[in-house]
Image (cartoon, rainbow, N blue to C red; front, side, top):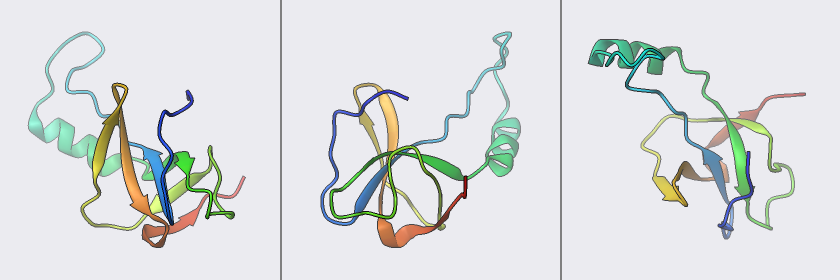
Length: 95
């Protein structure tokens, strides 16, 4: 992924938001049920886009699992991200 024009402060992390297309590859519009099913099958390990300088055990590129709850999505230069506090991260995938 590309470099992000944003730097989180304190104990915050920016991750890439999962993208679920509303159309198929051939251009057919998906039903709400199809979109909901895709969301349920989504791998919720999300890639870290940027971390605050205070966080040392998570780095850009790590895949982290975020606990449930409403997560603030933000758009930076046309890319969707989720902004989370480190305490919301349950764990990260080992390489």
